Length: 125
Image 1 (spheres, rainbow, N blue to C red):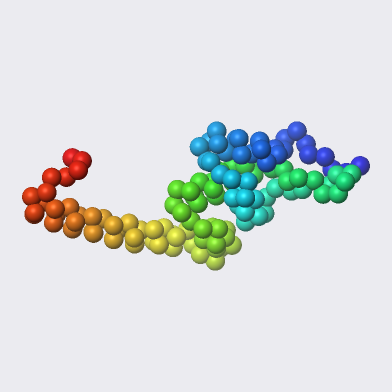
Image 2: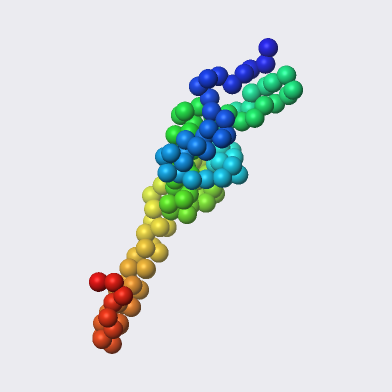
């Protein structure tokens, strides 16, 4: 008899709903991409061939982390893949984020100081 999804697996719509409950809003396509990246979500065999993808609770946890990193820090799948493969250390990804943040801080301070020197009133205190 073909493998049937167990009661401990979740279909796409349930995974999307669970991720939304965890404040990770995503699309089916992004879910599929992240799943492929992580090697998650198996497709059980059915009488008609290959079934739809399903995930375990632990896989949903991994997806939450990956999709959260993508959303919050705008990390691409390639960045995450390099970290997962061990090609790039997480510290390098952090350094890549720190450089533009430091630049923003420096430019932001400069612009604020110029505005103060001109006597401009800040939009928000």
